[in-house]
Structure formats: structure tokens, C-alpha cells
Image (cartoon, rainbow, N blue to C red; front, side, top):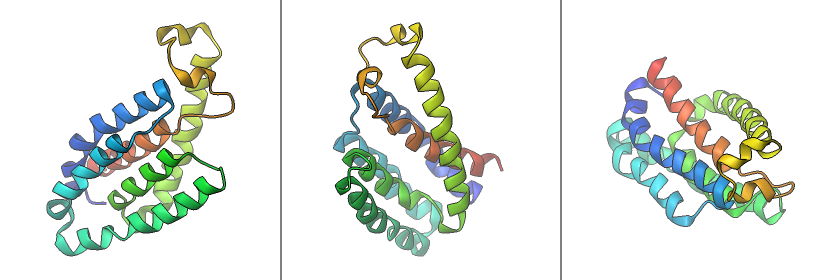
Length: 160
């Protein structure tokens, strides 16, 4: 991902990923509407950020990741919203950066789980007592690490 391409996407994606993270922690849902809204910056800005040919190639990431995500969903390994969000995020990522994306995701996943657990198992959860994620048992709202993975990926490209 070039800095120029990331500059197109980051300002548009950041508020959407923050909303998805917040809503997933609050309601344990990644809604279809929020996933569609996350796709819009790529749809609208993608040709300018990547150029038309690369933009069209980037769209191949969507059906591949949707199919993989639906297999994981069918196996009970992730929620349907998580699978849809991964598929919508996929076109933003350049295939050559796959290792970087996986490293970012691993780090953000561990950090998200640690911070969420800190709040969940202490009095800090009283800042948002109505959040369903505090009472979700073994389930963890992956909207936070997924959204932050895309955000940090774009931010790293901008400031690299």
C-alpha cells in the first residue's frame, strides 16, 4: 500500500471502523448496514487511490475472503458479521502486504482481548454497563481488532 493510496482511505475509514468496534462491543453485532458503509470508501475512492486496473484486481479479494469467512462461520469458528467484515475489508489490503496485515491483526487481537478483559473483569466496565460484550461468555467482539487492523494498516502506510 502506498502512502498516497492510504491517504485517500484513512480519513473515510477511521470513523466507520471506530463505530463498528464500539457497536460490536456494545451489542455484539456487526450489522449489514455498517459493513456496507465500510465498503463505500473503497467503492468511491478506490479508483483514485489505486488506479482503475489495480482497483478492479483488488475486488477479487472480496469473494475469496467471503467464501473463506462463510466456511469459518458455518464451522462455528466466527460470527457472520465478522466474516462479512473481513470480506469487505479485504479489497483495501494489498496482497504483497499479507504478512504485515497478519502481524498487525495478531498484535491488535491480543491487545484488544487484554484491554477488553481488563474492563470486563474489573469495575471499569461500569463506564459502559449496558454493553453486551461484558456478559458474552466465551465470545469476544472481533469488530474491535478487525477495525483497528484496517485502521493501523492504513495509518502505517500513510506515515511510513
